[in-house]
Image: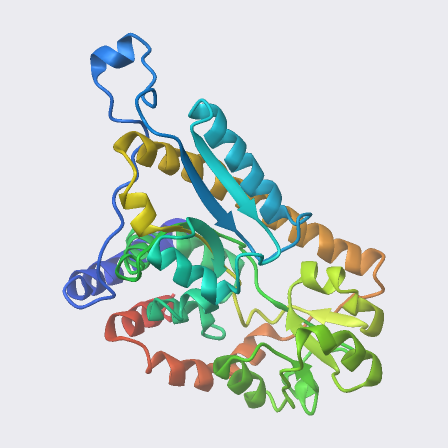
Length: 358
């Protein structure tokens, strides 16, 4: 499937990207370097490329708890940077949103006061509109198609380059899965959505999507959702297994289904202004540490956590997985998806249509 997808997608992307290079979201991330640019003589002598450089401290932040896998991955990255630099490059990690809201963090990165974070596509789209592509419902048929598209070099290059004008370097993504729908009654077909009070994020696209399924969609506050489920104010929610387990929402729910409506990529971002101020040797170290340690570890832990939490919800958490008619459900919301595709920039529209054509 990958080879076929790669061939078909790349042909369309080549034309789209050639055209959009003049009018797209602009910019371009510098090519990642894999080693510090020291002289061949210095390398031969085993010279320390950081010996004459001033120490650097960077702040990385995320909104999850200190026990979350994001903290684990960031700590491994911090340890790697410290070890490789001989203690000269320090990564300070701030969890639980202590440096501000996710929106404020991105703004701080643009001004060069925070070095890095991880961000959902929906948040990143506030700064780089083409990332609204990932908010479109039923754009991807399944996980394998999503992975294949994300692995396409031309697609990845364009989406990454689009961040540059916003002062952000995008090093890659993690989370190769869709959001699930958790409910009190089983959802197997389109009609089962009717009148269900499903809690959603405050997103116009998501609200329109579930209204197309005849849901009574709500945007109940996250902190009030447990009691809303308990009291019947809400019948369910659209989210992922780790959050459902962490918040014990399963105690008031019975079923889960996977209609493959919304993907959940999270992106590893670095402040372009802060990166640009680094000496070349430090830039190479950052590229190495993020590309070879942080992103792979995030990908590994995210997939493991999602699978483990979903298994726990089904084996010990009292939930039952129902087989739903994915094709019919996706067809029901196609009109919403197409409406929002038309609101995107021309080159993003073309990318979306290329994906749908597969």
